[in-house]
Image (tube, rainbow, N blue to C red; front, side, top):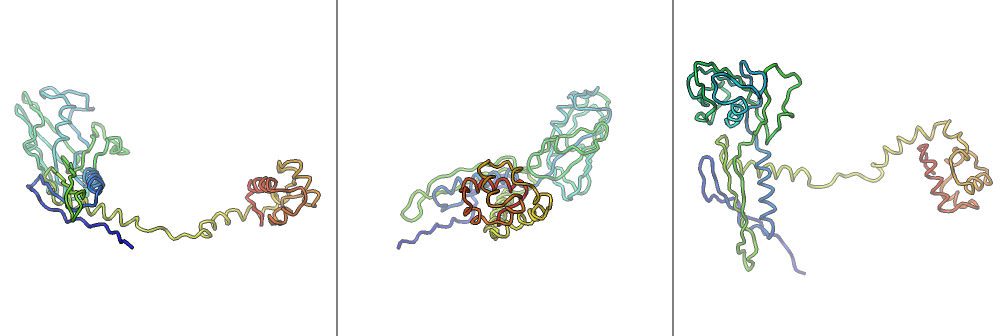
Length: 316
């Protein structure tokens, strides 16, 4: 008898690597597994690696995002978009406050921000706005850690302070993630897959660490669903039987007369002929006992079962 086995792939190989960009290859993937693994890894890389971003902003003298400020070349919407481009590394799990106090005339960049010890600004040269006169610009930003992209509607707090503007947050430290699949030879076959993964990060995470973490996340997720829950049919039905018990013991339900069950006239006549006149009398019968009653067939039995089910009662 022929034995079948799937060849295991190689470990990732570095093609090129820098602080923020990396290209890696995985060889010997079984035919079709290149796209299966590549697409899954890409989705995990883009959505499941933690990062930090500004989630809310308070600007002195500004009540909402559609305002303008005298002495500031950009409108508030443009200023907020520029703030969202800033990239941070946060070493604490708690939200951090970052402030900006600038006086014009000058061009304001990320370097003008004052950050606490738990925060590192990775884009100090990022342009924010230009002050055209001696205007003062005072901003307080809240920086938090999170996963993926979160719309501001989900980030809004129960109590929003006056003048606080919530922002959409792109927490992901990944700027770009793509993959390619090409065929390669393994033994006599030429249809095995080589997976090439291209990553670019914002500098808070190395591309190699991003790939390693995404692989660990995938393995952890798959391990958690290996196997099935051991539940027998009797165990799954036990709660149903217990929930029906009070209805069977209910004296009011057992006293209900047969003619009140909305059964067919032939079924009612056959039961009364057999001296069964109440629900309690039916509940004491087995299905086989009813089948032996003249005038009752399979359709009548199903009709009786449906009627008893309304009271939470089943035949013995």
